[in-house]
Image 1 (cartoon, one colour):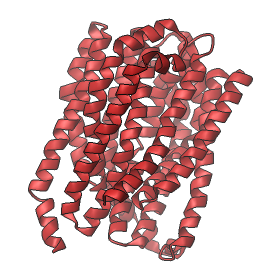
Image 2 (cartoon, rainbow, N blue to C red; image 1 turned 30 degrees about the vertical axis):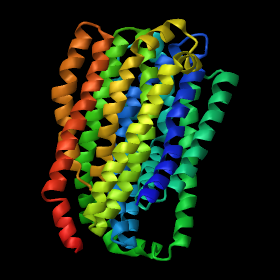
Image 3 (cartoon, one colour; image 1 turned 90 degrees about the vertical axis):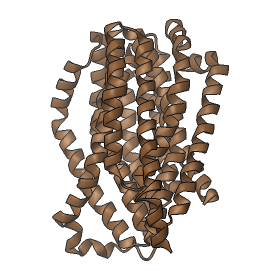
Image 4 (cartoon, one colour; image 1 turned 135 degrees about the vertical axis):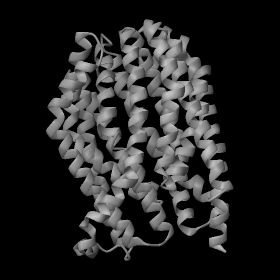
Length: 445
C-alpha cells in the first residue's frame, strides 16, 4: 500500500501544483504591470468564483468517494453510472450558472468591498471567465472519477495541458494585447474547455483498456432514474454545505481585507495564493487518501485504513515543513517574483509568519478531509466545518474587522484550521474505536 500511496501522491502533487502555480503566474503577470489595481480586481472577482464554482466542489469529492468504493468492490458498471449521473448534474448546474450570471455579478459586486477602479477590473475578469462554467464543473466530475479509479496520471495529463494553455494565453492576452484583467479571465476560461477535451479523450481510452466498462449501460433505464440522482444528491448535500461554509470564511477574510485597503488586500491575496500552493501539495496526499480509503473501505480492509491515515499525515507534515522553510529562508526571492511593489512586499514580510500555524495545522485537516471523503461520510465533514466556522473563526475575524487588525484576521484563519483538525481527529478516533475498524475487520475475516 505504501508504494501505491506514494505513486498516487506523486501524480497528484504534480497535477495539483500546476493549478496554484498558474494562479501565481496570473497574479505575477498582473502584479508586474504599472499598477496593482488589476491584480486586486482579479482577486476580488476570485471571491465570486470561489462561491460560484467551488460550492459545486461536491461534484469532484462525491464522485471520488463513490467511484473509489465501487472500484474497491470491482463494480465497474456502478463506476460508470456514477460518472454519467454526475456529468448530467454538472451540465445542469453549469447551465444554471450561465443563465443567472448577470444577476450573480450584480449582487456579488454590490456586496464586495473595493475601490471603484478595483471593482471595474474585477467585473472585466468576471465577464471573461464566466463562459467556462459548464467546462469547469464537468472537469470536477472527470477529475473525481479518474481519482476514484486510481488514475491520477490521467488527471496530471489533463491539468498540465490546461495550465499550459492558461499560461500561454496569459502572456499573449495581458502582455502583448494589453487586455489586463479581462485577458487573465479569458485565458482561464479557454483553458477549462481545453482540459475537458483532454478528459473526454482519456475517458474513451479508459473504455478501450477496460472491457468491463461498457457504454451499453447508458441504454438502461436505471441510469436516468430519479432514485439514482436522489441518492447522489443526498451525499453531495452535506459536502456542499461543508464547502459553502469554507468558502464563506475565506470570502469574509478577503472582504475584510479589502476594507483595510487595496495594499492589504493585495498582500493577503498573495499569501492566500501561497497557502493554496502548499494546500495543493498536501492535497496530493489527501487525494491519494481519498482514493485508497474508498478502495479499502469497499474491500472491507480496516487495518490497512488506519495505516493509510498515519502515512498520509506524516507525508503532509513533510510537505508543509519544506514549503514553509523555503519561504522563510528566501522571502525576498519568493515575494519579489510575484510583485514589484515595495509596499506590498513589506507587508508580506510582516505577515509571512502566519503561514506556519495555518499550513501545519491545516495539513492535518486536509488529510482528514480526504479520509472521510473516501468513506463518503459527508455529515462528519459538514458538522466539523460548522463548529469550526461558528466557534473558532467568526469571533476572531469579527474583532479583526472591528479593529482593522490584519494579524487578528490571520489568527482567525489559524483558528479555523485548528477547529477542523480537532473535530475531525475526534471523529477519526471514534471511527476506529467503535463502528468503523473492528466491524470492518470482522467482515473481512
